[in-house]
Length: 286
Image (cartoon, rainbow, N blue to C red):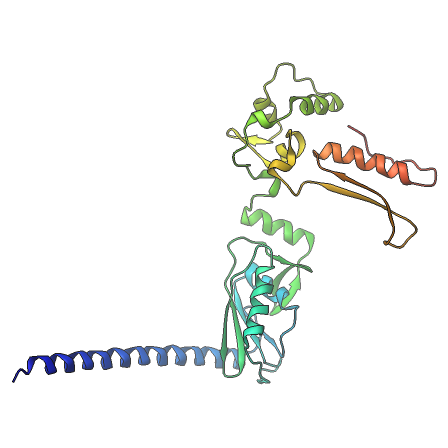
């Protein structure tokens, strides 16, 4: 009789049992660690990185961006302010809503959502693209609360995070041949600037509208031959309504050109539809 094959199968079965046991032990350890952390949250209460909510609501986006703008944190749904558990069930629908809220933050957030002892646990990492905002503004954690940031706080966070503004971003695949010399001359004439034979590249460089041979968004917005080729969202829609209700539109103008053209067209549109004698001050046409 050949005993090698049964012994081989037994060895394989033993290895499988040991492997399964290790996996189970690992999960148990992980759950034990999570349980300790969870109980610590409930015992110590809300703080810089922990927030309790009794139930889900659409305003949790304020807490999500606040955590991302600070040190990261954990949002517990189904916990009262005093740390007692009232419970919140994590359904597929609720998980989808939370993920959708996180994605709609600007920039979008990636969060981890789990269920633990009847509580929905949302873990938010500290953001790498601060500042983050939601529909109602910019928020941060301060003294254990989610607080709305003021203008100065937002400005400082932008400065400290060294985030490149939209205007400063270079435009891919755009060459100086796409820049209108006519628009440059119109701009310089109105601004009282003499550029002589200065090249388009040098002119944009002098305005900080290009850098290292790459045209920035601001250069496109002011001087591109076809602005919407690179920035399709760059347009202005002007509407004139009959009466004070926004139902009956009797005139509409869509401006799909550079910023100065949009400004001039907007002024003309206002002057055409203002029914009383008026004077628009502080604005010059170009």
